[in-house]
Length: 539
Image (cartoon, rainbow, N blue to C red; front, top):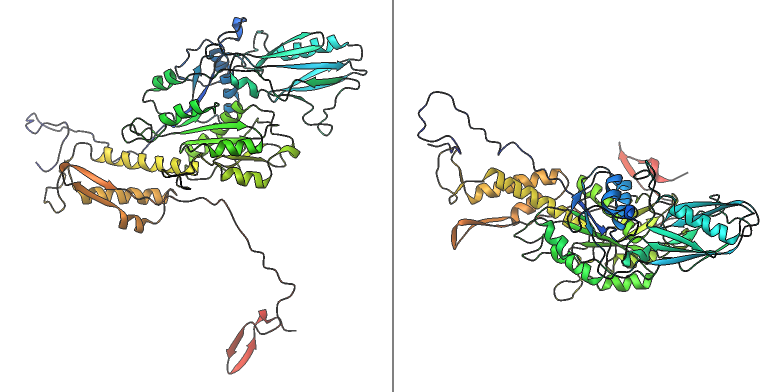
């Protein structure tokens, strides 16, 4: 029987017309590329309404902010990350991975001190973690009155009145006022709270934000401090199992956390980029600090699948929200086209450093060669991705190497491998294997190395048409498909794609002149006479 059926038995004798449906030649590769936000949920607040109801270390799909607030606790690190993600990406599937506060962790704290009372009415434009908290004051208020008003304004969105959850942004702190001093506490213990900022009048006089006359306010620092404790991720990573998570927002940049996630998303046998699991994926993070510290940090990392955004220490939005926004825009861009650069994609809702405190071009260029991704803020005051650099910088022998320097490289490679895997597993799922030149009947479920090679070339042509690769002829010349000499049931393939590149730099040499030389630029000899061309420049 020349045609290979999967279901209709060869000895079937019952009349008349029987149809077996086969979709192996009809489909297209489709995959839902999930995003995963990793962050701390609140579990230890004395006010139970601030604690999350979710299960730690178990990923869960989240579709709206009100669900995130309920599951992880309003104002928790993870709930705030969801808010930043949704501000940048409402299109792609979002999962969240809540982790509990580590044992004996302590919450970060900070103080706001009212030095003198206002002499006229006005508004104190306070900013906590980048969120505006306007506080109206009058000339009749004492220092204690102002402190109480500030604490009430900070705590106002914590009040569980109908409709509050999911409608008002919940701050990541609670506040207590006493003797003119407002003490802020992060809602959960951990180092993440050390990134929560405190400031006022961010937009200044031009933006209508000025300190009320007579009122003076001081802060214990730019950010809260004293937060200690980093969550453990072993149980979470184990519970992720074989579920694909393509874009991971990891707000922790300590060595132990990065090592655990880079191993999970690594190239070893057990890693998601390894040959056995073939799940793939990328890790995105953000780190705030002074220039020298971030360069030093970047040079200590070498993760192929990790991209950490360098943030100015004066930026108002905390690093965990930058990480979520970066992940959201990366997921949105790379899902549409993994080969397009992420440059110019705006990180909505992020409040950058004041204009005079932002990275300069020399600093940005150094970050790009030190394993740090970069962002810039231009005239619209909305930060945008500048270069999606990974941590990878050195090969196995410690020599400089740019093979995995950019996020787009691995994103494109994952797309190509999945396309190829889909084509092979869909079209040749139960085929017999024969040598090239074997004569067999049409319709037989038999494949040869040449047939597989032709399929790979055809798939490459589709990938080239879709703008993922280039140089089809060179690919054909270097592609090798052969039977294994020691296993007659195995085919070995050397797959050499030429990944398409990105337009990242345009260099122009402006070689100007004050006046071109006078002379004959073009002579056209017609009918035995010299005609002067229009471009000769002669008067």
